[in-house]
Length: 245
Ligand code: UDP
Image 1 (tube, helix red, strand yellow):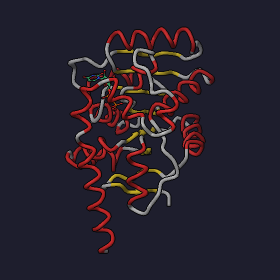
Image 2: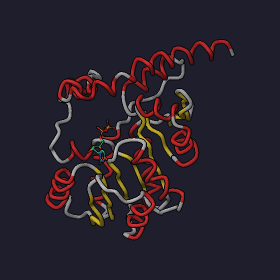
Image 3: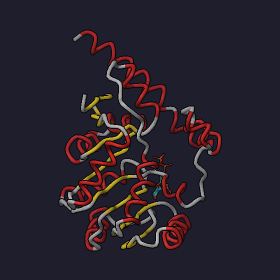
């Protein structure tokens, strides 16, 4: 199955290698591409926000299962997905690719000190990247104005770390103009990439407990996690409805 639907969001059923191969082709062809890496929270937001759901349906070229919650839900629905493909892993790989191919990269999002640290890391470890823009995510301009500023720099890759759905709203504006770039919302990835926030150690990642690690490190995330039991109950309901069909 090419696509797997979880609560109305159509996930691409590809493993990491398949995603990489397709993305390389699209980058080389300068094809306008919007990638959304969606976790249960994003799926729930889309179910409550029709405009965001429209972006997922009409603007996104790829939707990847970001997190074990989506993989489990697909399994429960009897339509398993091949693999979890996290936003951070894709981002880290795309930055390496950008370095190898001397690509033009625009980074937007995170706190000013985080984006400064990201800039320093790029200058130190990714010398071949042409950083055409790097700005924090705490701006007051309209997204249209910011989208215009990004487009002007003619980037090959645009990463937005503003949180969802704002990062996808910004990137959808550029996708609708067919900006010949690969664009992806990356949530908290700049925080991790900069080294300011630690990613869960491998043991936690392997055992699919990354979410729990982030909760322990940052208990204010608890409120956001209350959406997870709602997600599970909606998936159960969706399973019952599918059986009736
Ligand atoms: N952020 C931002 N501007 C805002 C609000 C948030 O740039 O107005 C950044 C925030 O600093 C963080 C990222 O957006 O780097 C979102 O992180 P979050 O943990 O919400 O993302 P997740 O990985 O959970 O999707």
